[in-house]
Picture 1 (cartoon, helix red, strand yellow):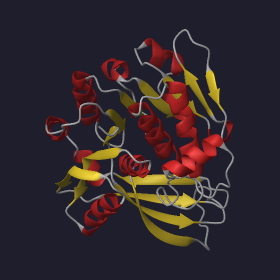
Picture 2 (cartoon, rainbow, N blue to C red):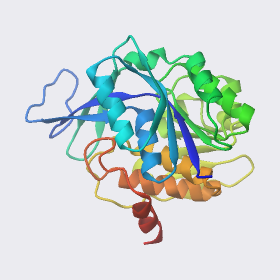
Picture 3 (cartoon, rainbow, N blue to C red):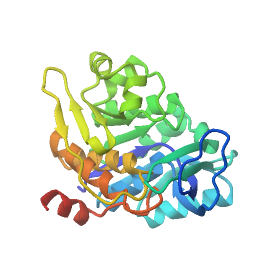
Picture 4 (cartoon, one colour):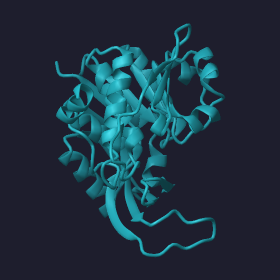
Length: 294
């Protein structure tokens, strides 16, 4: 059976403005260029996993609006199974993104339908899944109850759980202990009381992504494993973390060890920075393998 990744998370439409530099507080920067693109941390990760050649299923909600229709169509075109992408009376989520010439960004999100993802919706989706084995990937752009339900259902099936705790907020000990891997950037890890706390509360491993400094894999009683960054010409870092998490989940679903999975994540995350938009530069399997072997 083909490797399978189930993503439980958010769907947004990204409204992107490229500007010469990011504005200071209260400042207006003119001369920008605008584009609309599909987004949402969950949907980005599902699209990234599908592009890497595995069976990718998505669990979440969009609104009953034109943005929701476009978001669903984008996922289908990306090869994602949207059987469990439901609809809400709320509007489809929207992210406003400013990107400067160096590829750095600031993002504001109106959650919309993502805030309505409920444990019941997640449970119904998992009940109908027929895969013998999957890796479950979740993020925190949906309510805590939905994330906890995904982790609980995954644990019942002995499916590994990868959690990207973004945006960071306090996690229950039960959720932490259900995660085989937590992938957080430096700010998110600090907001969650640090790597040592996450490991002490039961996380199997913690990967801290550090931008241009690569990523560090932490495990209890093991030395820190450092993964250097793969050099690319950075245009936009939006979605790089989602690509990292997706590739890591894909590698685990294919039976690779965690060190190798982190390498896959780093390669995919780097390649995802080559163009503007969270999904524009999502790499293929061939591109990741070429970077890893080159």
